[in-house]
Image 1 (cartoon, each protein chain N blue to C red):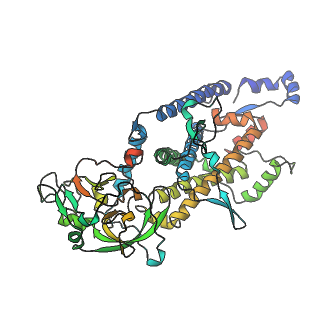
Image 2 (image 1 turned 120 degrees about the vertical axis):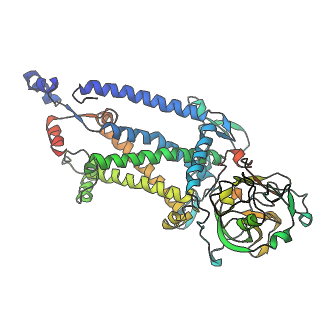
Image 3 (image 1 turned 180 degrees about the horizontal axis):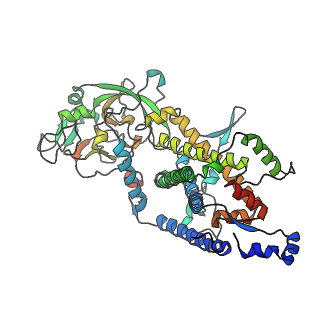
Amino acid sequence: MSRRADPRILSRRSFVWAGIAALGTWGSLRWLFTRRLDGGAQWPVRRALEVNEGFWGDLFSRKHKVPEYTADKLTPERENGDEGLGDDFDPTTWKLKVDGLSNQDGPIELTLAELQAMPHTEMITELFCIEGWSIVQKWKGVRFVDFARKYPPMTLSGDPPDLDGDLEDVVRYVSLKTPDEGYYVGLDMPSALHEQTLLCWEMNDKPLAMEHGAPLRLVVPTKYGIKNIKRIGSLTYTDQRPRDFWAEQGYDWFAGL
Amino acid sequence: MTSTETIESNSPEVVEQSTAAPVRVPTYKHPLAIRWFHWINFPVLFLMVWSGLMIYWANRVFTIHLFGLSIGPLFPDSWYSPHAPSWWPAFLTATGQDDSGNSYRAMWSLDQRLAEGMGWHFLFAWVFAINGFLYVLYLALSGAWRKLLPKPAALQESIQVVLHDLKLRKQPLPVRKYNAAQQIAYTAVIFMGLLMLLTGVAIYKPSEQSWLTQLLGGYTVARFIHFWTTMALLAFFGVHILQVAKTGWNNFRAMVSGWEWVTPAEKDELEAQS
């Protein structure tokens, strides 16, 4: 627009544009707020969460370790979340169902003793609740990546997976569910295979208490607490994006930290 | 600018009038890009604070302390879902619940909306970041930063500005696009915006971007800075609104249309500076 034109006319005209812009903003927001819900969130919000997942997922590295702490940084234990932890459960007869293996045709069942026969890892890491608080706890278990070397996920080609490579041939997800399927979590494969993701049976040098997910829980410090599922009943490698309890309530499916 | 207004101002009738009201001539103050950056920020900052409060609600960690005593939460519970007047737009309303469990029409509800708050926050954060980045890029490339960045003497001059604004000092301020107090405030706001973005990423990705979280003093400290920088931005916003109201329509219009009407002497002064 030429500055030689009469500024009084230009000035008036720009107020017309300002009005159009204000109405446009109002209309856009109104449109956004009233969209169909997809997993509890307006679908444009859900798409935005997926864009964020792609953006931060690209920056994610399985080798980049989250900070580990010394014992003097430990904070008091905190009990939070009991979905899927019903009373009718007998830990003595518990077995972990594993499906989607590349070296087995059907599902297998593993006892706690079989899991504990694998190499142990201990770490003191911070667990971030999505509500905004965090605690520092000591965990012991088998690294998910060590578990996956012994019980490897399916591949698209049918060949044995290369877990140190780019994972392009490996199925993309892990689905974890409590025995009663009252709580369920979906994990992307890179996060599952992160060096500090543990299948955990000991917390603060004691066997897991029932309220903390005995006999086996997930500890994934690269995700919010909601992904750290307690009392795992089944573990399935899959190429279908698994259902996720909190992602169905409007939360981000990825929930990466 | 050889507009008819200036020609008319040489005629005797107009000069006579001008003793009552001095002649004003238009000068181009704010480029189009700056006006867009400015006004995009307005709804985006509102939406960021609103969705941020939904997130804050889920774990209200900050309480007011006075002389070492805790005197309650920073925001009373009643602020989280206040009653709506009848003219309040329907699509903004939410269902509030009073202590006895009765539902009412609320202006907004920040209760139990963590998931929604996070969704909006991480959507509009992109608009905030991109708009801020383009604004700084524009300042750098256009040379507009020269009028915005405070000079070494700005601190002293800004005291004079504050005294002037509080009517404690009579001398008029020098004619400039931005006075020293404005330069300091507007430059500080850019750095506050950057701090919001950095502390935001630090508490959004404390594992993946742990270097940033550690650099900013850890999760709790970064969250604290993020929250209180918001409060500082809102304080800036409050003073900004008061100043705009005080300065009047001519100044406000310039942020919409770009044009401000000034005396010919002021115009010469401003053009000599650009």
